[in-house]
Image (cartoon, rainbow, N blue to C red; front, side, top):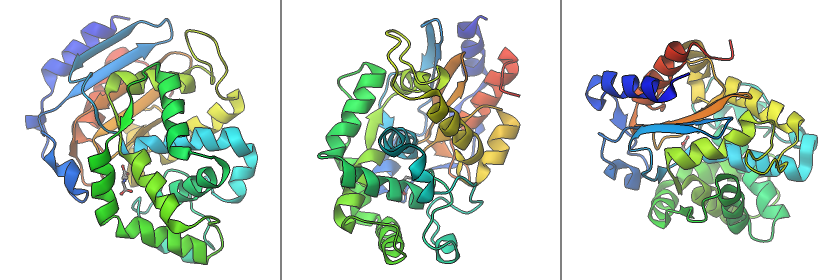
Amino acid sequence: MDYQKILNTIHEEMSYRDVKGKVASYIPELAKIDRKKFGMHVYCGDQQHFSFGDSNENFSIQSISKVFTLAMTMRIMGEDLWDRVDVEPSGDPFNSLTQLEYEHGIPRNPFINAGALVISDILVDQLHDPKQELLNFVRKITGDPNIHYDKRVAASEKATGYRNVALVNYIKALGNIKCDVEPIVDFYFHQCSLAMNCKDLAKAFMIFANKGRMLETGEKILKPKTVKRINALMQTCGFYDEAGEFSFQVGLPGKSGVGGGIVAIHPNNYSVAVWSPILNEKGNSELGMKALERFTTLTGVSVF
Ligand code: GLU
């Protein structure tokens, strides 16, 4: 497969001018990003990799970080996690509070904010320094020691994240949060502020394409069963209330974030990351989704 040729075709075919959406602005710091940014990176199982555009430029990965914290939590508590978080698509916006009341504080899945905040609670409870441990985890699976939190993005979200604070308080009132609210939201705002590029993200997600093992060393990071669970959740819940549309258009498990990044994988084959900060109405990167639709069409490879 000539991946570079396929990526060049996508780069030539598409531009930020073709999409009408808006850059996320509810976290003020995110509104400052240049809407013209567009990059893509493919990492293959034979360790070859291919890219175009702004694929080496860091951006705010936002909810893509929920895949990393889910992986860390499953390493700590395995299947017991599912007593506290469910595995069903929500069909509601990512920051919704409504389902929690009648579902007794059990979030629908780990990728909506309610689920990610329960996961933050577990990591804050179980780890001495969760922020450092998350950095260690992503630095290890990318091999990039320079990955950091973007303190300005974290502070910007902290200043405006009333809904996330409300979610933690509400879930705590319903009995599914153990720790104090402040350290949970502080950890959550930091995880969302992780600054990474398409190259790092494609590399990091190779553990989900490679049954939980690091490609270069063969080191086992996650059990194959954990990877099966995480990939299933990415397929069914990875794109807010547009997971069906992403499966329909692209046909890969993946995860998006409101910073405009999307990462998707093809098991045993490749991982692919794309970034364009212009979001569609559902909060997914508009150009990113189109680029990935072209990618699985031009390669003729998807999981379906
Ligand atoms: N930090 C964002 C929030 O909680 C994450 C949004 C996202 O990427 O889905 O509002």
